[in-house]
Amino acid sequence: MITLTAPIGITVNTSVTLVALVTLSAALVFGLALMPRPSRATITWSVGFGVAMLATYVWVAANQFDSAPLRALSSGLIVCFEPLLWLGIRAYAGKRPLWPAAVAFVVVAPALLTATSTTAVYPTMFRVVFTAAAVFAGLAAWELFRLRISARDVVLPLALVSSAFVVVAVLGVIAGLAGVGSSPGDELRMLRDINGVGILLTSQCAAITIVLLARGEALLRGGGRNSADSAATSAALRARLARAQQAQEPAWSLLDIRLDDPADLAEASGPAVFASIVEAFHAHVLDALPAAADVERVSDVRVLALLPGGEDAVRRELRALLQRVSTIEDSGPRASVRVSASVGWAGAPAAEYDLDALAAVAADAAALAQDRGGDRWERAGVSTH
Image (cartoon, rainbow, N blue to C red; front, side, top):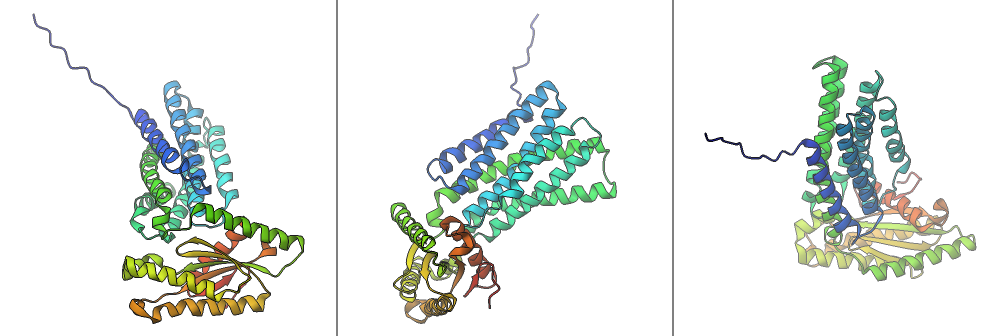
């Protein structure tokens, strides 16, 4: 008698897949973004991936022990990835990181779900937390679409996945309010499954986008200064601010000067002409600013300038600077290209003479100037023209 035996199969469940892929994504971010390019953005993103990786391990433990509190804790930790992703994007864009809202969510969401995991209000709490996470996902998508980089397709997958998170959350809220769909228990399981699938998709897209943003930052933003030169210039700016603070000199301002629409300029003009535009931009900025100003070339399309002078003097310098940059289009092969700049202006006393805080405030003002059409300046905390 011949006995036929079935081949031995290898089964991989959803939990193992979740752990493997999220761990792989975290390893890529740690090894290819954080270690070679440590910054506020890559550190924040790495913390987010660390939390997501921890969440997958807790998820496996919850399924192993059939523990409702552990399952709730895992769900809360998973959605904490969204606010940390958003914070990292803001840090990458040079904007002020809004820590309180994100940190509050990271602390409250897992604790709230774990505490209510065995009560009747848990389904409601889960929907609230899921919807709040979708708000951060929407903010992340908004920041990604607003990033001024030359290769916009780099951020498109992550932006679309984050937008899909928002759509799913909105549909879930509508279905819950209308009472449409399956029973509450089935709906909760469906949301939990969507949460798991969502972190799979988001982690993969985020890992690819983050690595490309971190490793290709100079290329995407049009290049930049040598890191040693930049550090030396920053040290000089800090020393100048420290002396101004010690002498109680309020008439110092930091200008964040940015070339408008660099990606569009590069696409319309071509690499050679764009390179000449960049050089002309920096030359005109240096010519327009007073000799007493300290200037740092942050990248090919961005300059920080610390200069003395009262409000009237700074306004004159700003008008002259914007006028000089706008004349770049008047000569040579750039005659058909419209060139302009936007400037964020922050007074040193507003940030207590701290360079990092001052740069963040000026960056927000510069971003506002560009959002309002460019070829203008905005003063931090003050309504301008």
